[in-house]
View 1 (spheres, rainbow, N blue to C red):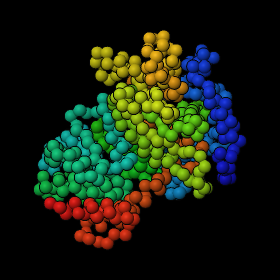
View 2 (cartoon, rainbow, N blue to C red; view 1 turned 90 degrees about the vertical axis):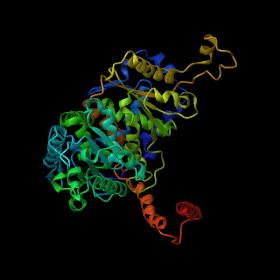
View 3 (spheres, rainbow, N blue to C red; view 1 turned 120 degrees about the vertical axis):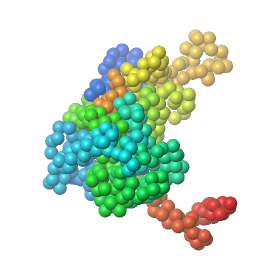
View 4 (cartoon, one colour; view 1 turned 180 degrees about the horizontal axis):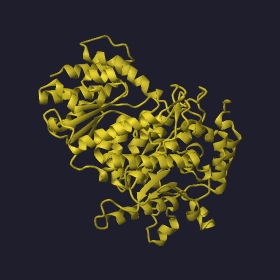
Length: 544
């Protein structure tokens, strides 16, 4: 493939820059006044999701100019390359095939001329059989008791994905199963997660591809010691631990039977691994049938992304709007605001999904980028966020594009709770878009000295995503939507979205520092700040 021209030197980029200058003073009030049908026109449906993108600071010309970035970046070819198993993760020499994990059409996908789908289906079947055994009570612990507690031990994508999905799909879970997640190497996490559990009824799932991840294996060894102390026999490990890994020998050495190891592959990135065996604790909680429904949802959005024209392609449009604000309007962050408590961990999950993927400063050709790439991603569920940070979004000095995510029906229709929740949902996007002028304040009788403080500038852009109900299918579609948005932005920015070299340096230095913390007084050869901090830690650690 021919090397691409530097992005900000292309005609398409320059046209957008010039257009952004002309759009500087355009307001959403003006755009809606000029086009009364705007709210019906700038919308799109895909699967179970309805996207209203009319409250964005864009015109038809803006969208046309943004869409011109797609052929310039060869987006169509990159989508085809990912779905067909080409090694688009070039820095690690791997395909990127999370889409194969939910390929419900079962069409062949070749890696090194071998179809991966038989192996994908075999692991899915292995997971389903095991989940049914645990859920039915057939699988028993070492003392013969059924399993009532599931503890997942992982970190990064091996934790964030299943933990977020478990909360999201809790209405579909077995409520007599206690499901917990341990990730932090801080001993507090594993101690508190196991403190009130009965070891005889507890199953640990240890998720580490290599079975060497420092945080995960430290927690796994602590959990193993806890179990053995409680049950009095090392042989108990085989009935209370399973592994999600590819390192059979290390798994066996830990005490886990290889038959209870669930494989995933190097072409599955951690932050995209929820639909792999990493999702085992989720399947244990919600059952194989609901897990398959979730996969169906992922697949539906995958097919939409792969086949819909870009001007009607939901992930592509969200990606282009993000580029518009980040590269041409000065936005440095984006907020994900789900108005559903079950999606409380959604923003945290996509902090990793987005920031680890597109938090890059080097192009595919190894040059330093000369334009902004991935934004800071953050958010909280509504209406909690309204009482925390919406003040800054409404009246602060930073432009923060927001995605509002809501559902027409609640799983818990108590009184008028859902109507009150959704009234806030709709009100916030209206208030952010149109604000309140000084004249409107005066008409409401606001004292003149307070008018500047009660004026809202508006022009705060939002997308609204609305579905009928949070189901396994709609949830799968939603996660896949944001995955493909991230991919699209990475392609346009000409960066590699599927490596994460930025996490390596800190790990390397931590391994160097660890023995310095354990030994009495090894010499320190860091910078003066780090030396002083370590010395202070040592002194405090020795003090009774």
